[in-house]
Image (cartoon, rainbow, N blue to C red; front, side):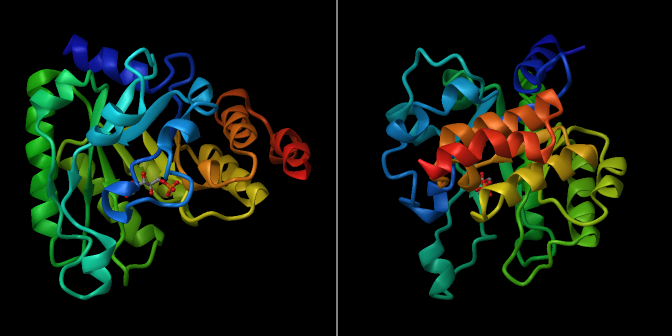
Length: 266
Ligand code: 5RP
């Protein structure tokens, strides 16, 4: 047993239920100052007490998070692309490299490291070998690796594609997978023998986001790695508490909604 690896996994995933509420705020690595993340320090302050884990880049961690924070960090270590070059047709978002070495991840006391894979794109091989390099480093130093099944612009977020990408990530050694929810999600989980968390995706009405979290957990997800549907909500702290209630406390959508609705009406 790799004690460090096991310990880090149990810091990311609550040992009492094997689930996690991961707060994703890494979007700036290719989107720049996304709405809600301009002043990351202010955004994080009311949310961190309710998060099990924080997904973030090293630059943002150093600049916006006080070292006294006790929440485990899932460090985003892939990037090198931007929405600007993608929109200009100069490059594509799938053209990622690894952007942080494992020594710096250790220096930052990362509980996990994460990179995107773009299966079915021109950069499939490059992003999959990014993942395998990371898994080699993670195994060497006892740091779990989470693969993010990113989706190219033309790719459908359906069971066929997402389960293909998720299973490939596991076969290549990923310790966790982050993917999107889709119809038939329980089949994806069944074929993916590591903890699977879902991304929230673009901002949708709060109740819809709670419904997404409920359906994902019911289908076997180990929780969420949610960003925009929390920090872009008009009631972000209520949203993360409601999501937490769903992931850890078995709240129904109606029960969780009762935590959010009054705060939205203020
Ligand atoms: C970007 C990411 C984000 O962390 C991810 O998309 C989660 O955030 P959201 O819930 O806003 O989709 O991995 O590539």
